[in-house]
Image (tube, rainbow, N blue to C red; front, side, top):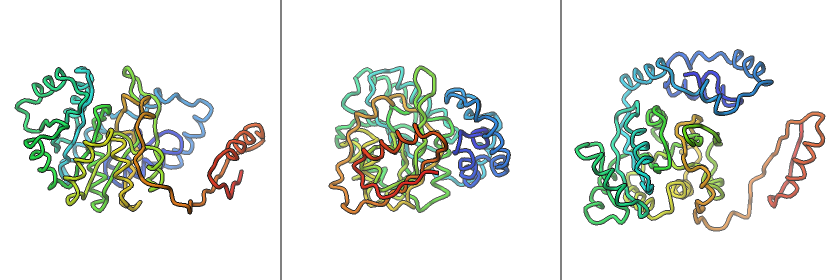
Length: 334
């Protein structure tokens, strides 16, 4: 996979190592030449590509990539994923695109429960029910969860791996496989999440290369996104699914789940863009989870600022730090 060999800036070596460890990309990822990566980085530094062009060149699956993934799927014992998708769109076309992305997944061992939220129009619900009629992979329920629907959702309690996804997310064709492989690699993990970008009129932009999990960060921003996987939640799953439905969106739910005392080593960050958000500009409207007051003992933050002979830039950076209300105890420039 070309993204593992030539990924953007500082993500290159890391993505190659992660992909090789998960066995997603076969020998190609395992044989990444780190010196060549460094040379490519230096040679391209004077001609940086806009993200959209970079994605076209380096982040599109080749036929060889797909063949490698299919071989891995056949040779690995990867368990099923149940996709719980929340539908609030009033556009039949966008919902069709969302379901098509799911139907085209390279990893075929999945089932889906579609939950119609209050904003979903009768035309959309009728269209989806007609589309999935006779397809045993799909179940459809309403957000009000009447008695028949509660019985359907209760079946999920015995599933050990669930993807929670919004209809504002378009999965890439290798997304379910990468999530499943990461979860299989770490059977003790409870919440895998990945990077994302924005898809607008067919054009990719605004990549979100996320940090590894921090128990503190979800209190301030729903950075885990509108697509996460839950694993090893058997005892809590019935209550968890009800919590998804009662919360204001998947992103808020994901952040709420992340605050349930999860240790950092139980959360997996997959540093690959595995889905596109089609509503990235509305992210600021997502309410933050109610998590109580912050601890009075905030952790120390060390800020390293690479700089040389550009005092005007460094001064602006230092000035912005002075305006922070976080207790600044240390800063160094190099």
